[in-house]
Amino acid sequence: MVDHPAALDLKTTLPLQLCHLTAVLASLLLLTRAHWMRVPVFFWGFGLSTQAVLTPSLTDPPTSIWFWGFWQQHGFLLAVAVYDVAVHRYRPSWRDYGYACAATFVYALMSLPVNLLLGANYGFVGNTLPDTPSIVDALGPWPQRLLYIVALVVTAFAVLKLAAQCASRKSP
Image (cartoon, rainbow, N blue to C red):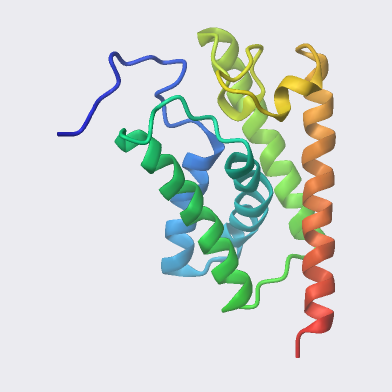
């Protein structure tokens, strides 16, 4: 029998996390290989899903389907990003980097009012902290930590872009 959340909690159960959007894009990318989907799957898959894997925001035990769903979803995002780089030889341009930063900023701007209205933390840009320890805890109080989040994201995306550029120089 599948366990269900005790109650629908709008603070945590809406499909508004960036990984939810990325999972839809990753699925469509496998079907279409549309360039505009490659960009967020690369940057969000590598740059943000890696953070989720390193510091998972899990409150459910391993006996819960939600625990395994978390790992399946984030593993899928990383796998699609790796597949696109390894098989289809995707290498982001600086224009792609700019698009990824802009798309992430738009997502944050759209999730911010939802977070403030619900007292939620979708995209980790809300005025609450995650239920489990994460890098967000070390970034100081809200709203100042939003500046650190922006700086970390644009830096992580630049590192990913540069790493892909270096990899493309070494590949045959």
